[in-house]
Length: 301
Image (cartoon, rainbow, N blue to C red; front, side, top):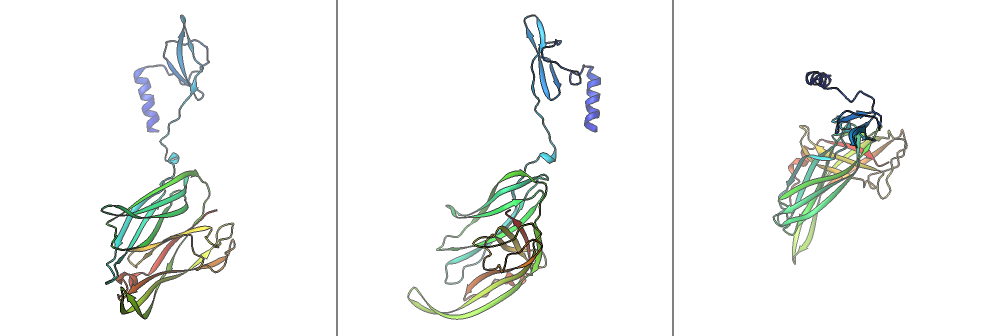
């Protein structure tokens, strides 16, 4: 309303006739060469032919809009975070844990074909690249995800960068499944004797597993199923009671954790297990702090 009032004030102040409201017929006479007029979606120009002035045939007007509804879908990476764990004594390797958010700022369009590239770099360039695929991000959706990587042979990252690509598509109806599930830390120790560079060593190998049994209610009109890959993507992060994030999951590979297909309206279980092996070291302290897994299930269909 303020914009309309300002426009009317400007017109009255300048005392110029408006050609926008007047009917324009191609070939009819006009007043001055170069005069412009807009009528029924076309922009007309007054041209001089010989000694007479005529309206030309007009061209379609270009519509400009700053409406938020016209903002295309995005897949921006927000709050990227990574950390590196200390070497495992005589093993020359390190674990890197990363987490981030994907944000679609559009309120009308869906982001499709979303690819997130994570580049792990040292002082000489990229040493490892990981690709995470997300089927789609719905209007206004924020998606948390995480992952981890192991680095050996002295090639450890000093920097981790995220970038993403996606397409924009209009979408009117959508569904996702979100939720929280409790997490238990399961630990198993085993004594082993191994040869390392010709030297026999007695070691203790510890398998620490973050385990969460997640109940899924299928709200879609198709089965949720996994064969070699699932027909959905599953994303989430491990958190403690204060909301701190400790890596997470971004995958469509849950064949071993998937019992049966879930029919529309049915209920099923994802037995999520993320294991970490430690050799002659106690598990990372933060493992015992994790209390819940916050997840999002996004269908591919």
